[in-house]
Length: 154
Image (cartoon, rainbow, N blue to C red; front, side, top):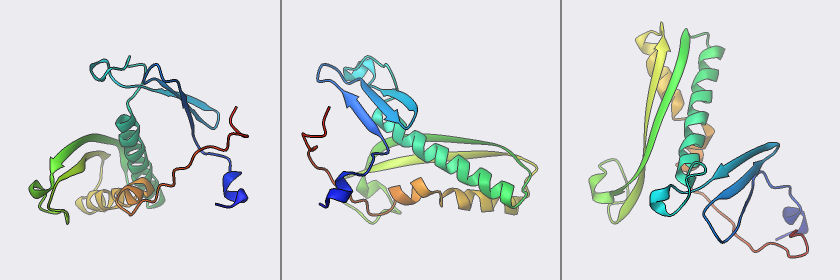
């Protein structure tokens, strides 16, 4: 890996200790916390990792639909995106290419309010699947994991 790739400023920094699941998250000037629920051994100090994943998809979906509606002057008033994550048997998924083992499933329900025509409503639902996070989650993802340079750890 080049020195230039190593010197890139991270978008997100997560810090935690080995005594608990609680994690401190720095996203630019924003500070967040993540944890696991008590039922999973955490202290429920913040959302769990999959909650953040679902949040990212929901926020992106809502923003994309809203932007499209504004640009096309659709009479959209409110957007509600409800999401859930589960694991399912691949053989139970008719639309999935994988037919063996388990798959992650994210169910997304979008409620749109306003004086939309049936065509406008259908177009906004179609646009929802084109948000950048949706595209990322449904594409091939390459995650490069490496140990930190100890001279930079502080």
